[in-house]
Image (cartoon, rainbow, N blue to C red; front, side, top):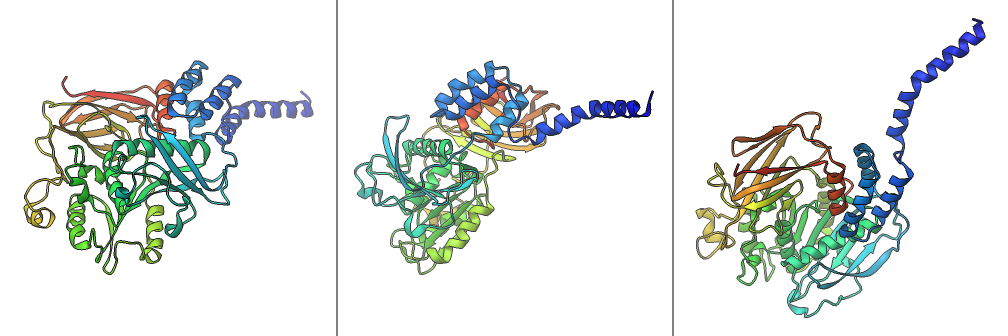
Length: 454
């Protein structure tokens, strides 16, 4: 063979050998993973959906294209392509699943860049008792409580729809979902703050719906307000506060919630495992004049405490199946299970030494008129340790970011192994929860249903 021809053969052979690895590298670094026209079209419709319900219907179209799990996962992590949107103060409204109309204002930075992910702060107002309808108040701007560049959301509450009601949980969820469909939101930096009644509502939301939020920041509020007989519905669980960090400010001269009343509660919650950054203002009154001194600490706290979409530890307690989820844990059935824990450390239970400071009579912080169920989870690798009380069935949502699907998954509940096997990844499951959560960072490859009565 002639030298030139031999050289050409060697080059051709080298190209053949190199092509597979080059193609693999191209797929790994390509900002838009390759997919067929049918897959691309189906995902375009999915991203354009107006709501989780619409997205769920369109998920079936994606599944029918035959998309592989890996391609679907890459596309979901990339998410939709964002475009320029209105900036400044934008007045919006929605109607929640319970049929109630809500108004809210969104403050978008003037230099909003759709290629960048933005932190979001919900700011809940006070003075609910003085509001008889759902109409907006003021111009909708964040005003004196402005901090770092971010998107601010100002929802509205009133007498018939206070912050401490299930309707407002639906409202905040609907707002988060709507924002993520238009604006490039950093899913792991969405926080809830509030002043006065809004701060008290912040405690309530943290105990009722933790999954979408990174941290909770009540200013001049008081968790004790929620023990009022008109509010305490038997479904308020302080132990649920252990899932997320809190930044708390109260004033020493506050005419409603002075530190002398509030601090026994904050000390109790911290001793019960709630991560709380507490900043008392000795001369502070029932206003936010201290904000210029606190602002930098507040914003640093938010930046330093991003949400972990798949935390290794979770605890969740519920008395019904309406608010039964915390991230990758879903409580499915309530009732007594063999071998369950007789007692679990409960932030609702006040030590005798604290009782005189916190309440006039001995007893829990909040009532328990009906049985509740609780699950505590600890994950280490592919092993999940579950401790339960009052729960007969729960579901674990398995993320490909935290579980190795090439190895068995083991679940130990109350000291007994209840599952130990390989779990298959499912495109249908991936799309189901992607439609529901609308979250690029919290995706699930499988549902593992655990029955404790077997």
